[in-house]
Image (cartoon, rainbow, N blue to C red):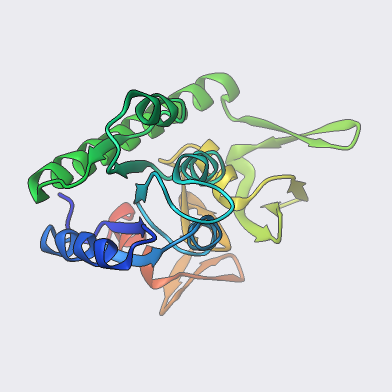
Length: 242
């Protein structure tokens, strides 16, 4: 079901972007915004929750759509479906290097857009399952966090919550705090999705460590952690509520 999936449009011709937006809304997607350049696209990717990006290959600015898509996926693991008016082999081969989740030639029919996005979202789900499986097999219940010249052991079962600190991520356990040199979103993608849930742009929590939920906060012991509206439904779906 695609209803309410969040999409970013990256297209520097506003009239075309508006047509894409109308098509997406007919398909019951929620358009989080329209970016016309690399800079705007990266800003959306870093600040906004989204499920997929519809990216024009030839956007204006410092980087083209192919370079922008590659950076978005490397940093934020958001799948990208390319749009282009150019059906030449060179454009396609360049785009292929970024391992795109879909490729559409303009002009396209709304049904073609629908199929491309559904395939992209399904591939993303399969990729996450594979990454989670690999992480679990490789790490078991133990993480080793690099801190200068040493490696600090952290058991995943001891983690209470994790919070973002600018360009770093801080892991909180009952006995210690450990800083990881990566973004929260990147760290979250590496963790077992059945045990942890991101509930805010700055927080993820170990589901089994939640003691109470009240209004827009979860409590782990005496610590109150905010829950964003965008994540609240996911949180409630993951809990056994009587």
